[in-house]
Image (cartoon, rainbow, N blue to C red; front, side, top):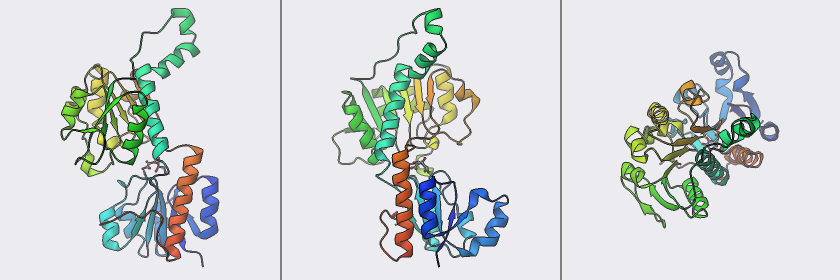
Amino acid sequence: MKPDVLVMKPPTPDVAEALERSFAVHRLWEAEDRSAFLREIGATIRGIATTGGAGASAELMRALPNLEIVAVNGVGLDAVDLAYAKEAGVVVANTPDVLTEDVADMALLLLLAAAREAVAGDAHVRSGAWEREGARPLSRRVHGKRAGILGLGRIGRAVARRLEALDIQIVYHNRRPIESPYVYYSDLEALARDVDFLVVTAAGGEGSRGLVDRAVIDALGPDGILVNVARGTVVDQEALIEALRENRLAAAGLDVFEDEPRVPESLRNLPNVVLQPHHGSGTVETRAAMGELVVRNLEAHFAGRLLPTPVDLG
Ligand code: 8YV
């Protein structure tokens, strides 16, 4: 008999097919009454396939008494209650590496677009304003400047490699210094004071909540640009909106937000932001690779093999 797997969000057709081949699939997003659905099928579920955003709360896992594995289609684990999983003996897998380069591409795109005002420039041409009103104001140079990476992990390093190609000097802040060619700052505010751009690639969760606060934003200053491809929670979104509105910060490029997909109008209306719908890993190629890894992790678990990409629960 195929193991029963609860799928939290609609997968791409290929991944849906692969899941159906190996598992009895239960689609949570189709349930009209989620609690009733979980009451009905909860005891049969042995695996969850979820996303970085949907995760797996303790409440959900508690409703699935025979749960063995949570496979996350993403690298971020902030929405999975890891402490509960560990206590309940539930193993967790995610999809590192396969998405690193795409997310780094998105960071580069957002930095360039924010600094060079690419979206406003596009609108200027499309709307006919160029012909009617003439050229747009000048934008900001990117190459040759200094950038700070908040969270020099796999994605942070991939961003740094791209920025090096633009002759950008890289510094970074992590909880602790790591082996790297870049200068380490133990104090994020001091780093922000010394750089032109701050790129957030740190993991989400309680440990990083609000790290980029008003003081850090002000240290980045009126010529500074903030890019966030990590989690909206790492940045104090209200403080960011205020700083952008008052031009205490030049611009921001954001792929992630505090309460997705809700993005406050006060942020959407700002002219000095470039916004993306949490699409760092959102390419056909990468989403296929991530989906395949989710399926391989689930298959390995139920076949009693080692998982390709397990999460160390300590
Ligand atoms: C995805 C992500 O957007 O990897 C993560 O943590 O947030 C993203 O890659 C999401 O998990 C899509 O399923």
